[in-house]
Amino acid sequence: MRILIAEDDKISRDLMRLFIETEHRHTILEASDGEEALRILRDTASGRIDLCILDVMMPKLDGLSLVEKIRQDENLKSMRVILCTALSDRSKVQRAVQLGVLHYIVKPYVRNLILEKIRLAESELAAQESLEDSSIVCERLGLDSGAYNKLLRTFLDELRNWLAFARTCDSVRDCNQLAISVNGFRGTALTLGTAGLARVLSDIEALLAQPLDEKTRAAVDLGFNAFENEVKMVLDLIKNRSKAEA
Image 1 (cartoon, rainbow, N blue to C red):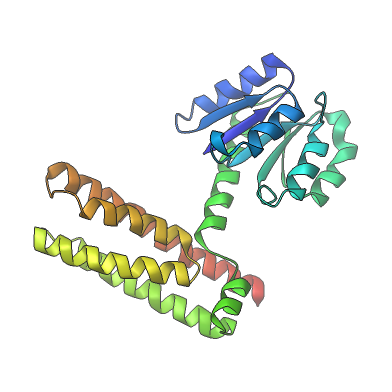
Image 2: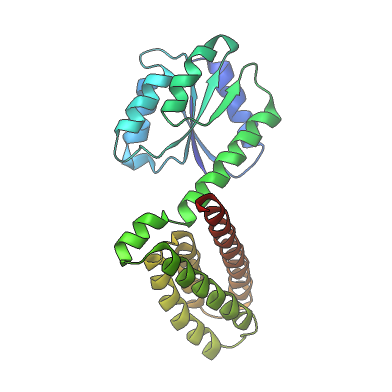
């Protein structure tokens, strides 16, 4: 993930960065006040930010005011936020909840708790990007939720059967056939609101277009593993959504 740390105290900011860097898989951007953080968030040249870790007390623009501006911005309003608070800031938590802040880090910092919050936000982001809101998809397709869920489950069953077959393929001709299937599946995944599946399928399609050598085969196998995990995630999301709707 690309994570923005907004904290005016340099030592606290450095400490947070060091904690996150132990994971060896995140890109970290830093801001020393709320206004600088907002500029980074709005700067398309710096790339999409996936998660903001904001201190409540910052000069120029405090953490809560920054969250308000984030929620008012069409391009930023769904941003995941972790708020850093001291015990004395607890009176501000209610306002933060109203602004959609679900996660907090209470000072003094504890490394494992911080990493746990980040992993939780990461899993929520993955879930959010894997499966579009069913009401939006149903409206777009002109289907009721029952018909849509049945169609989606049928599609996922088809994908699992295809994956079992794809793992047995081992020739240039087989890969060409798989690439054709992947292209069709990717379009269906987008239509049914499963953007996460579409992204993984797009990666696999790009790999299948490369010369079939040992390196490519290994990369395709990793792509298949990622695809299998994404299918499982979507199935779990469907189950959880069905329980919530029941």
